[in-house]
Image (cartoon, rainbow, N blue to C red; front, side, top):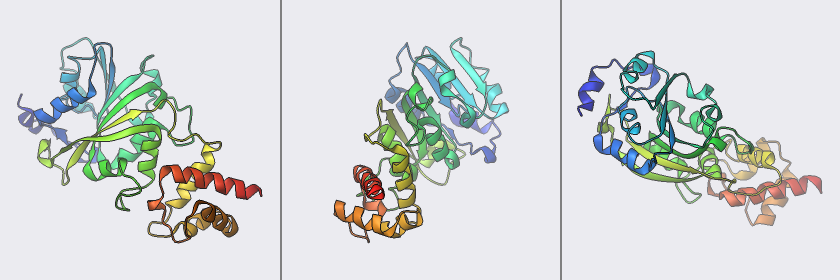
Length: 281
């Protein structure tokens, strides 16, 4: 299967961030790790010209390929099978719950510049408990920039630049793991950075049980609003009172100079609870 030559024959659009996966090993890894069963419906985001698609249709009950490029759509239409549905539309404007009555598996090789918006679209925000997309998905396998993969699986013990809002959003709604690092030469055109396959196994319930998820989201947004600033100053900028901040941090054993990048997701939940409690006292 000469993926490289086929990719060269297609005129890619830089504005769409098109970098086609041409590595047979990487494509086989996607198929293997997705563990596609004959009863599965797979939604492929950014199907491109069909290198992964033509393998997916061999295993799934149905493959729904979502692609924005009209020229790529013409290539996808050449795949000869009756279990492929092609949608010419933007994933960020797509309601996953309308595509299938059962839960679906997501496979995506997406433009790196919209990775975070797509993850937020699929999982919903932290306080969006009844998000229709997330409730329609069992697993997500993403090809993302390696640096982004590190952010998705980071912890409060990771380098500060890795741990942040994307980390917490991803892990709040899914178990996250890096499956495999994928070199830049596995794509055409070759990007400037390496990539990684990441699996997000969607949770039935959020990571934490909280009384007020909207307040938790507010706390997180404030905590990461100013990188390299301490938690006290970040929370002050987020509208919390100085007295409330001091009481809450003291109760949890944090100093005012603690940075948000060093606080675990669980401890952020406790911080949100303390801030609420001290607001009412």
